[in-house]
Image 1 (cartoon, rainbow, N blue to C red):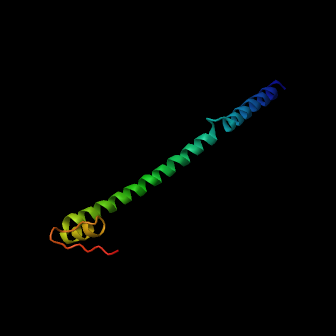
Image 2: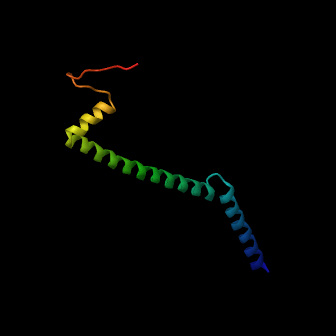
Image 3: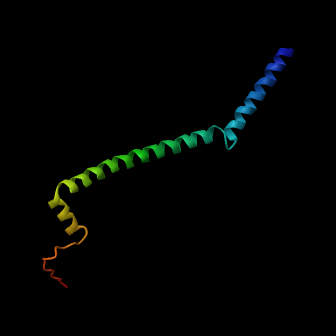
Length: 90
């Protein structure tokens, strides 16, 4: 009879500890939340690294091809050559 009472109290204590870990702010839910945030951040980092590689490729293409660089400068930056004539249409 004594051993059953000890087992019963031990199970109650373990149950309360498990319940407390589920309810508390530093419990299992918090750990799962942090793990999800870590996964999201790792995914964002992977996307940014991929974008970085793409941008490096574009930059290298501009460095290797002066004509492409000129087209970019004219269309995106609005640059003109010194001997160009500019017509402004209103």
